[in-house]
Image (cartoon, rainbow, N blue to C red; front, side, top):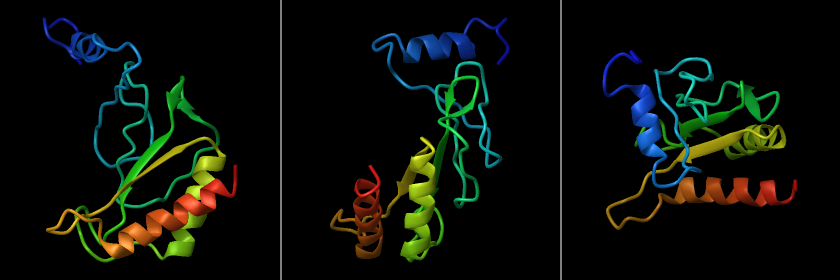
Length: 133
């Protein structure tokens, strides 16, 4: 963050967008309340171990898109399921209806196929969201 260094967050952000001015930049500072971490964030880092927040609008703050990223398994990269499907669908619908972004991490097996339980949950969320447009 120290802008007095030759290579700092400003130069890094400009480099990330050099080839495409519409590229999205975000910086993560750990598992905390969803918020922007730097003046260069386009999205909140939003990495959390569960869905325990909801946006009140698209913007978390100062034009930074509200974004939450969590996993479907029992842990990051884990099998099993953290959410029952109805609860997950309700959380996803609430986030999307308030113009937030929800990203769900799935696990693939040795054949590179998404685990059946994860696939079914993603499919159910997608179907429900299509019905809310």
